[in-house]
Amino acid sequence: MPNIQAIIIKSSDTYNLKKLISLRAFLLEEQDCPWTLAYDHENINEAINFLQNNSLKFFLDLNTRNLIKLNIKPLEVIMMPKNKKLNYVETLNEIINSFLYENEFVIDKLRSNPFFEDTLFQEIQTNKYDVNLNIFNIYNKRNQDLKNLFEKANFNLKDNYNCSQFSKELKIKNYWKYLWSNVEKYKDESIINNVIV
Image (cartoon, rainbow, N blue to C red; front, top):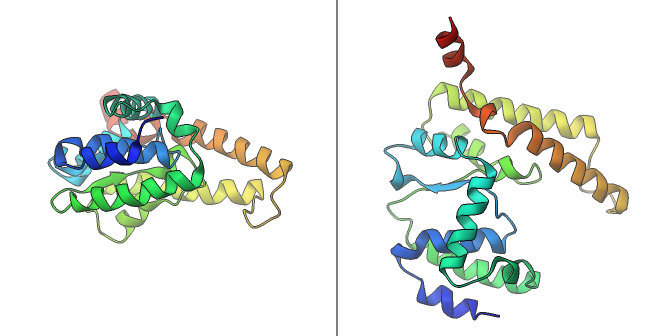
């Protein structure tokens, strides 16, 4: 088992920022969660388009490669006890935030798991991110689909958690990934229609 604390401290620089973000994703069990740093793009619309145009597998592969560059095996992180993971996440959050003074860390947690908070849409709604109308409409529709899904599935996280609830949660996750993880869902239909006409 590698000394992750030592690796985190040794890698605490802007050069290794993306690798640390990938380690954080694995520690939070969000290996396939889409993310990017906005300094890679001219504006926030391009950053969000980058997230939309790449599959969940792309992000899983990216995070896995970054973890291997830190000489950490993904399975070692996955098998780690939860309390240990959370301690590392606290340290990583401090380091990552210290390097984000001129960058924006854009993440779309909901795309990979319907039980995560839709922080991307919240930031779009509160005008933190100035996005074009097409992007707003896509995430607004996704938010409505999520509400409808939970209403129709009659799923409540506050209920007693048993095997039936666990099974229902897995089915909801799979259905959500079928609905909204696909890159095609995020493409602007009006552009396609105009090209066909």
